[in-house]
Image: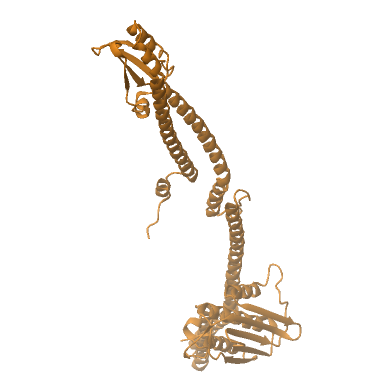
Length: 463
């Protein structure tokens, strides 16, 4: 599996969540503004078309009486000019006068907008209203045209004000969204920093409660995780310290065994060898042979002792022999070491078989309990039981009748008892220790097991 490098991840991350939300809000505002502007423009165009159509129609209607008088007037051309001039300053209608030959001789002066609209906007908004031509007899013809520039300029100014107001509202909304999102997402920044501290091994990192409820729950979950990691780290440190102490104790125990079991025989071998040499020089062959046989016996004894030490140091026999056979091997070992103690092994697992991890934990507990009973209790008898008290459980029970110590270790001691408890806790099992002065120890370990569908070989059902 390819591992993404941090710099690659940062390049692929793109915009931040806040930037993406702001972009989405801005795009929404922009689309709303565009839609509103188009809708307002269409409504304004329709309104302008209706207004100008009505204005032109009104101008035509108002021309009926003056044009009737033109036929009886002795100065018709002058009256026609005056009629055209009456439209000077009009915002909606312009008038033009043409003579009988079709030549323009007078036009009205319309009102001009103070701030005309851009050409593209005027072209889009300008309605197409046909001109109206009114005959004026011998005086000529009057043409009435709709004027839209002033109304288009007004529409443009209104639209510009609307866009400016909406833009100001959008900026205000974007600023508010930016502040709200920044406040809401602040816990994510804290979480990022806290995760970096956790990754660096600082399990004291915590995040403060606050913000939206979802991130608040996320922060609470992170704090709980950090607490558990801190507990696990503390437990691991304690286990490391205990492991170092146990290693030192094992080295000291091996040194004691070598000193107590091998040292005297080495001294005896050296002494017998010197005596054998002396006897040979004095031609006392019988005595020399006796010393040599004594050396051979001592070497044989030391070999057995070394094999026993090696058997204690090598890996757990549970995986190779099974739990029942491993317990029998441990009992045989101590029976050989202490023939003065009566050892009794009772094993009956039926169809139950512990998983390898549980079997290893049970065997280690039994091994430690046997060692404690032999070394510290001075018992006359030790009873080892392996059974299944109920479906789904395997139990190892070690009882002795020697002198009992405290069931709970004193500070700074009792690593064996603490180690048994921690082993069973790691195997999801239970450990019970009873110790009464004058009545001996009882160590009972229970572990969950799996159910075998087919009877396997071996006393504990291990294949």
